[in-house]
Image (cartoon, rainbow, N blue to C red; front, side, top):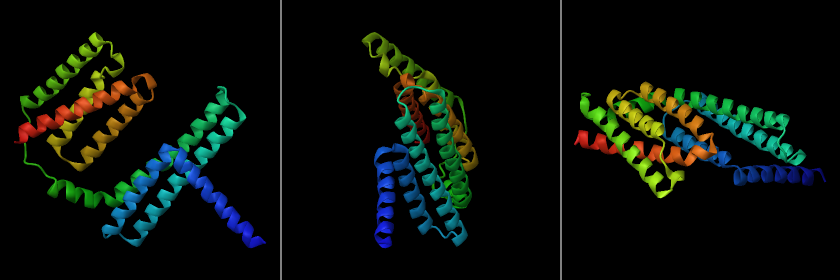
Length: 231
Protein backbone atom coordinates (compact mmCIF):
# COMPACT_ATOMS: atom_id res chain seq x y z
CA UNK A 1 0.00 0.00 0.00
CA UNK A 2 2.76 2.47 0.91
CA UNK A 3 4.51 1.79 -2.39
CA UNK A 4 1.41 2.92 -4.27
CA UNK A 5 1.24 6.11 -2.20
CA UNK A 6 4.90 6.88 -2.93
CA UNK A 7 4.35 6.32 -6.64
CA UNK A 8 1.25 8.52 -6.52
CA UNK A 9 3.17 11.30 -4.76
CA UNK A 10 5.82 11.17 -7.49
CA UNK A 11 3.05 11.40 -10.06
CA UNK A 12 1.60 14.47 -8.37
CA UNK A 13 5.04 16.08 -8.24
CA UNK A 14 5.57 15.42 -11.95
CA UNK A 15 2.14 16.90 -12.67
CA UNK A 16 3.22 20.04 -10.84
CA UNK A 17 6.43 20.27 -12.86
CA UNK A 18 4.54 19.65 -16.09
CA UNK A 19 1.96 22.33 -15.26
CA UNK A 20 4.65 24.88 -14.49
CA UNK A 21 6.55 24.18 -17.71
CA UNK A 22 3.38 24.30 -19.82
CA UNK A 23 1.82 27.39 -18.23
CA UNK A 24 4.81 29.54 -17.25
CA UNK A 25 6.95 31.12 -19.95
CA UNK A 26 9.74 31.92 -17.49
CA UNK A 27 10.00 28.28 -16.48
CA UNK A 28 10.40 27.26 -20.11
CA UNK A 29 13.16 29.85 -20.49
CA UNK A 30 14.86 28.53 -17.35
CA UNK A 31 14.71 24.98 -18.67
CA UNK A 32 16.16 25.93 -22.06
CA UNK A 33 18.97 27.98 -20.51
CA UNK A 34 19.72 25.20 -18.03
CA UNK A 35 19.87 22.64 -20.84
CA UNK A 36 22.26 24.85 -22.82
CA UNK A 37 24.49 25.41 -19.78
CA UNK A 38 24.65 21.70 -18.98
CA UNK A 39 25.47 20.80 -22.57
CA UNK A 40 28.30 23.37 -22.61
CA UNK A 41 29.57 22.07 -19.26
CA UNK A 42 29.87 18.57 -20.75
CA UNK A 43 32.03 19.93 -23.56
CA UNK A 44 34.35 22.11 -21.45
CA UNK A 45 36.99 20.66 -19.08
CA UNK A 46 35.46 22.07 -15.89
CA UNK A 47 35.94 20.39 -12.50
CA UNK A 48 33.47 18.22 -10.62
CA UNK A 49 32.91 20.94 -8.01
CA UNK A 50 32.07 23.47 -10.72
CA UNK A 51 29.57 21.04 -12.24
CA UNK A 52 27.98 20.54 -8.83
CA UNK A 53 27.77 24.31 -8.37
CA UNK A 54 25.97 24.57 -11.71
CA UNK A 55 23.51 21.84 -10.69
CA UNK A 56 22.83 23.52 -7.33
CA UNK A 57 22.22 26.97 -8.82
CA UNK A 58 20.04 25.56 -11.62
CA UNK A 59 17.98 23.64 -9.07
CA UNK A 60 17.60 26.77 -6.93
CA UNK A 61 16.28 28.77 -9.89
CA UNK A 62 13.79 26.06 -10.86
CA UNK A 63 12.73 25.66 -7.23
CA UNK A 64 12.14 29.39 -6.85
CA UNK A 65 10.05 29.43 -10.05
CA UNK A 66 7.95 26.53 -8.72
CA UNK A 67 7.32 28.39 -5.46
CA UNK A 68 6.48 31.53 -7.41
CA UNK A 69 3.91 29.63 -9.49
CA UNK A 70 2.40 28.07 -6.36
CA UNK A 71 2.10 31.47 -4.65
CA UNK A 72 0.44 32.98 -7.72
CA UNK A 73 -2.04 30.08 -7.92
CA UNK A 74 -2.99 30.42 -4.24
CA UNK A 75 -3.37 34.20 -4.49
CA UNK A 76 -5.54 33.91 -7.62
CA UNK A 77 -7.65 31.27 -5.88
CA UNK A 78 -8.25 33.52 -2.88
CA UNK A 79 -9.03 36.71 -4.80
CA UNK A 80 -9.41 37.79 -8.41
CA UNK A 81 -9.59 41.46 -7.49
CA UNK A 82 -6.65 43.77 -6.91
CA UNK A 83 -5.43 43.76 -3.32
CA UNK A 84 -2.21 45.30 -1.95
CA UNK A 85 -1.35 42.15 0.03
CA UNK A 86 -1.90 39.96 -3.02
CA UNK A 87 0.48 42.18 -4.97
CA UNK A 88 3.05 41.96 -2.17
CA UNK A 89 2.83 38.16 -2.14
CA UNK A 90 3.36 37.91 -5.89
CA UNK A 91 6.13 40.51 -5.93
CA UNK A 92 8.03 38.81 -3.09
CA UNK A 93 7.79 35.41 -4.81
CA UNK A 94 9.01 36.97 -8.06
CA UNK A 95 11.85 38.61 -6.11
CA UNK A 96 12.97 35.19 -4.91
CA UNK A 97 13.20 34.05 -8.54
CA UNK A 98 15.17 37.17 -9.44
CA UNK A 99 17.68 36.60 -6.62
CA UNK A 100 18.29 32.97 -7.54
CA UNK A 101 18.57 33.84 -11.23
CA UNK A 102 21.12 36.52 -10.38
CA UNK A 103 23.08 33.99 -8.33
CA UNK A 104 22.98 31.55 -11.26
CA UNK A 105 24.30 34.21 -13.63
CA UNK A 106 27.19 35.04 -11.28
CA UNK A 107 28.12 31.38 -10.85
CA UNK A 108 27.87 30.72 -14.59
CA UNK A 109 30.00 33.72 -15.49
CA UNK A 110 32.61 32.79 -12.87
CA UNK A 111 32.88 29.24 -14.21
CA UNK A 112 32.71 29.95 -17.93
CA UNK A 113 34.60 33.27 -17.98
CA UNK A 114 38.08 31.85 -18.86
CA UNK A 115 36.66 29.98 -21.84
CA UNK A 116 34.45 32.89 -22.93
CA UNK A 117 37.38 35.28 -22.70
CA UNK A 118 39.54 32.98 -24.81
CA UNK A 119 36.81 32.72 -27.44
CA UNK A 120 36.12 36.45 -27.31
CA UNK A 121 39.74 37.54 -27.66
CA UNK A 122 40.94 35.03 -30.25
CA UNK A 123 38.29 33.31 -32.36
CA UNK A 124 35.88 36.25 -32.46
CA UNK A 125 38.47 39.03 -32.45
CA UNK A 126 37.77 41.47 -35.30
CA UNK A 127 40.30 43.56 -37.14
CA UNK A 128 41.23 46.57 -35.04
CA UNK A 129 39.29 49.67 -35.93
CA UNK A 130 40.34 53.11 -34.78
CA UNK A 131 37.29 55.12 -33.71
CA UNK A 132 36.56 58.20 -35.81
CA UNK A 133 33.67 60.38 -36.92
CA UNK A 134 32.17 57.53 -38.93
CA UNK A 135 30.96 55.95 -35.69
CA UNK A 136 29.06 59.13 -34.87
CA UNK A 137 27.62 58.96 -38.38
CA UNK A 138 26.16 55.51 -37.66
CA UNK A 139 24.45 56.75 -34.50
CA UNK A 140 23.16 59.82 -36.36
CA UNK A 141 21.83 57.52 -39.08
CA UNK A 142 19.96 55.53 -36.44
CA UNK A 143 18.50 58.79 -35.15
CA UNK A 144 17.35 59.92 -38.61
CA UNK A 145 15.93 56.52 -39.58
CA UNK A 146 14.05 56.18 -36.29
CA UNK A 147 12.71 59.72 -36.60
CA UNK A 148 11.54 59.02 -40.15
CA UNK A 149 9.69 55.88 -39.03
CA UNK A 150 8.12 57.74 -36.12
CA UNK A 151 6.80 60.36 -38.52
CA UNK A 152 5.56 57.67 -40.91
CA UNK A 153 3.71 55.87 -38.11
CA UNK A 154 2.11 59.14 -37.04
CA UNK A 155 0.97 59.94 -40.59
CA UNK A 156 -0.47 56.46 -41.21
CA UNK A 157 -2.13 56.19 -37.80
CA UNK A 158 0.01 53.19 -36.79
CA UNK A 159 1.08 54.80 -33.53
CA UNK A 160 1.32 51.39 -31.85
CA UNK A 161 4.33 50.57 -34.04
CA UNK A 162 6.06 53.91 -33.51
CA UNK A 163 9.67 53.07 -32.57
CA UNK A 164 11.24 54.27 -29.34
CA UNK A 165 14.00 56.76 -30.07
CA UNK A 166 15.84 56.17 -26.78
CA UNK A 167 15.74 52.39 -27.24
CA UNK A 168 16.98 52.61 -30.82
CA UNK A 169 19.88 54.91 -29.96
CA UNK A 170 20.75 52.91 -26.82
CA UNK A 171 21.02 49.63 -28.74
CA UNK A 172 22.97 51.21 -31.57
CA UNK A 173 25.41 52.93 -29.20
CA UNK A 174 25.87 49.84 -27.03
CA UNK A 175 26.64 47.56 -29.95
CA UNK A 176 29.15 50.03 -31.40
CA UNK A 177 30.75 50.47 -27.96
CA UNK A 178 31.18 46.70 -27.61
CA UNK A 179 32.71 46.49 -31.09
CA UNK A 180 35.15 49.37 -30.58
CA UNK A 181 36.40 48.38 -27.13
CA UNK A 182 36.10 44.61 -27.63
CA UNK A 183 36.66 43.54 -24.06
CA UNK A 184 34.63 40.79 -22.41
CA UNK A 185 34.28 42.56 -19.05
CA UNK A 186 33.10 45.77 -20.73
CA UNK A 187 30.70 43.70 -22.84
CA UNK A 188 29.14 42.17 -19.72
CA UNK A 189 28.73 45.61 -18.16
CA UNK A 190 27.17 47.08 -21.31
CA UNK A 191 24.77 44.13 -21.58
CA UNK A 192 23.85 44.57 -17.91
CA UNK A 193 23.08 48.25 -18.45
CA UNK A 194 21.00 47.39 -21.51
CA UNK A 195 19.11 44.75 -19.55
CA UNK A 196 18.28 47.20 -16.76
CA UNK A 197 17.20 49.84 -19.26
CA UNK A 198 15.05 47.49 -21.35
CA UNK A 199 13.47 45.79 -18.35
CA UNK A 200 12.30 49.19 -17.16
CA UNK A 201 10.82 49.99 -20.59
CA UNK A 202 9.20 46.58 -21.02
CA UNK A 203 7.43 46.82 -17.66
CA UNK A 204 4.97 49.22 -19.30
CA UNK A 205 2.59 47.25 -21.54
CA UNK A 206 1.77 50.31 -23.68
CA UNK A 207 5.47 50.80 -24.56
CA UNK A 208 6.52 47.22 -25.28
CA UNK A 209 5.91 47.24 -29.03
CA UNK A 210 7.61 50.61 -29.36
CA UNK A 211 10.63 49.31 -27.42
CA UNK A 212 10.85 46.12 -29.48
CA UNK A 213 10.78 48.07 -32.74
CA UNK A 214 13.47 50.39 -31.38
CA UNK A 215 15.63 47.40 -30.44
CA UNK A 216 15.34 46.01 -33.97
CA UNK A 217 16.14 49.33 -35.67
CA UNK A 218 19.12 50.15 -33.44
CA UNK A 219 20.56 46.64 -33.73
CA UNK A 220 20.17 46.43 -37.52
CA UNK A 221 21.66 49.85 -38.20
CA UNK A 222 24.60 49.20 -35.88
CA UNK A 223 25.25 45.80 -37.51
CA UNK A 224 25.07 47.25 -41.04
CA UNK A 225 27.32 50.16 -40.08
CA UNK A 226 29.91 47.89 -38.48
CA UNK A 227 29.85 45.62 -41.52
CA UNK A 228 30.46 48.57 -43.86
CA UNK A 229 33.28 49.96 -41.71
CA UNK A 230 34.93 46.52 -41.43
CA UNK A 231 34.75 45.70 -45.14
